[in-house]
Image (cartoon, rainbow, N blue to C red; front, side, top):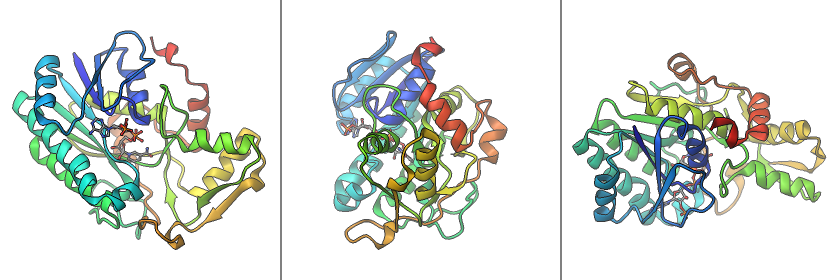
Length: 299
Ligand SMILES: NC(=O)c1ccc[n+]([C@@H]2O[C@H](COP(=O)([O-])OP(=O)(O)OC[C@H]3O[C@@H](n4cnc5c(N)ncnc54)[C@H](OP(=O)(O)O)[C@@H]3O)[C@@H](O)[C@H]2O)c1
């Protein structure tokens, strides 16, 4: 069984690779060159906006499932580059969804907790999304496309992803925070943003499990701890033995020049807990797992 992961060099994809290579023939694709891959994983380099090259790649690999992580995941970059964000987050998803439909391939797309407006909190899969920024608009449209293409497709809405990069690169706030705290530099986190962070190792395991499952539809992948981002950073610093007075609170919606964020985008994980064998964890359990995770353990 062959799995294709898009956005191979990204934070989330690194963890999927680590888990999937146990049971799948793993292929990954990214716009930049991939280095430091473990054995038995094949990297392909291309711009997913090039439809012809993407179609040729699908014909070459003939995957049984695709996990689509590639995106512009930075909220402010999307807000300031609306057209490009639409082309990448919606256009590429459309290309891949069409190919998957034609070739009978199961597709999983990574969406986000920020598709919600953040007023109610504790969102379940039946709650209606409402975008407060352009990133969320692109993700809501991407969700619609993937769900419309096939009933076996999956929209995995990810909470804030916490952890150390499993492979080389990765846009990890934890790694950045640890670096700053080690140097005695302050770190700022918003108090207004309530989230249910999921650790990157659990997330990779859950997405891999979903790729091999019969489930179709929307599922929320989130941790068991509901917490604001300032308190989260404070606890992480405390658990790691760093000086907690370096962790400062901010209000992300009061900062000039930033795209709006939903305040309470916490998500329920009742469905994930019932359909997956991968357990959802607390913040503390997730931190322990991500700090101690070794890719070799999964060979
Ligand atoms: N990380 C989180 O906390 C979080 C939370 C909720 C949802 N998500 C979603 O989960 C997914 C993965 O997130 P992530 O944090 O792993 O993102 P990431 O680290 O930014 O990884 C995305 C990868 O996609 C690649 N990519 C972008 N445009 C491409 C193109 N045209 N062709 C080929 N590759 C392209 C990027 O390459 P370059 O970097 O070289 O452009 C990058 O390696 C995203 O869809 C994101 O929206 C993430």
